Image (cartoon, rainbow, N blue to C red; front, side, top):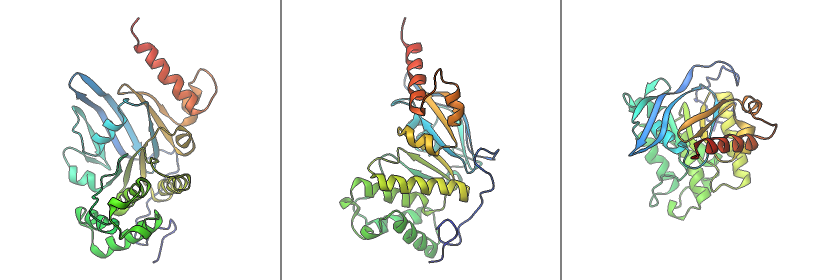
Length: 274
């Protein structure tokens, strides 16, 4: 199979033209985004723009609002207020256009156990109305890339958690999205596959102009790979910037983990009753 310079089958779009950190047109726009569950305000007026080709890491403690934000971005949860735009399309007013341009890897894969891996990718291709030959070519490519090819004709119910996660990545990239949202992508992956996926995502952002929005608790990876990070706590954005920018705002030098703990502990102290 003929491949382009990134290893993807030829025919893929190579559109990157902005270096990391340069001004870029937004691929993700969250405007005054809020979500309330009863009396709990899970996300509180979030404003955020992620540029085309940017690798953005979304950090926060459990219950901070990360997954709720992601579910609003992917159309799984309707916002109480505010808007989401994906590649210029309003996720509520133009949901099909927005979803066509979006790939999603959830923390717990959505798969059909009674299908084989190959059948599942064929099903996903049908949802996006992909041309059959192109879908077959890309399915073969991503099954091989994520090392699912050897079990592609086995039922998914027999897959390990790590194999399910890798199949989710293959499904995410099958329709050639412009924006990819990944929620805790390292769960179930061994160190070798974490390294492989990490390099692949970074390369796609750098060379293909893919926008990556990743929620993770693995702060060392965020520090290594992100163009910018956002730290959320109690539904509000505490900090936004490059790793170096955020480190400079800390009271004392340290790793991103040190800064993260300092910021979130400060927030807890301020929220505690007197």
